[in-house]
Image (cartoon, rainbow, N blue to C red; front, side, top):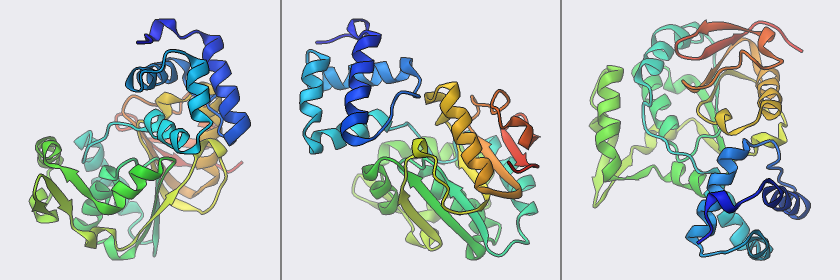
Length: 276
C-alpha cells in the first residue's frame, strides 16, 4: 500500500497538472497537506501503487468523478457548534427579517446537514416562507444526498445532542421520520431551497445574498484561494449582508478583510461594509 510519506510534492503537482489539463479543475490552491492525505487515502482504498497508475485510472471519467467525490467530501453534522446557531438565530437573522425574500447561500453544503439546520432555525423563527436558499457543492453525490435528506441512524445521537444544546423550540424528532436504519428529514423544510452543483474555485458570481454560510471549507484552501473565495463572497453579498465561516477559520488575513466588520469574533460571523 502507498503511504502518505511516499507522496512527493512533484507527485502531487503532476497529478494536479493532469487533472487541470484534462478536466479544467484546479487543485493547485488547495492546502497541500490535506490534499496529500486524501490522495493517499484514495491510493490505499483502490490498491493503487503510484501516481502514474492513479493518473491512468483518472483518464476514465467515471473514476475521475469518484476521485472528486473522495477528495472533496467533508464530515458534517446538524447544528454543528450550537452556539453559532444561537448567535445566528438571536442576533443575525432578526436583522434580516424585514427583507422579503431573505436570500441565503449555503456554500459547500455537503450532504445537507447545514441546510436542514438552517431551515429548522428559520421555521422556528417563522421566516421559512420568506426565504430563498441556494445550497451548493462541487460534489454531485452529496448534493443528491442533501436533496433526499436520508441519514444513517448512527448519526442521530450527535445531531439530537447538538439540537438540544442549540436550545431549539421543539424536538429534532419533530422534523424527521424513521425508516429502517435511516431517518428522513421532512421535505417541507426544503420548500424554498434550490440545490446547485457549483465549484467555489471557479469563483463566478451568480446571485446576490443577505447571508452566506461557508463553514469548515476554507481550511482546505491555501491563502491565495481563500482570498479569491472571500472576494467572491463580498461581491455576492448585499451591503450589510452576513458571511459566516467555520469556528477554526477567519477572514482576518484575507485581502478583502477591510470590506467586512466583525459581527461576532467568537462565532466567526462577519458583515459586509464595503464593495470592491
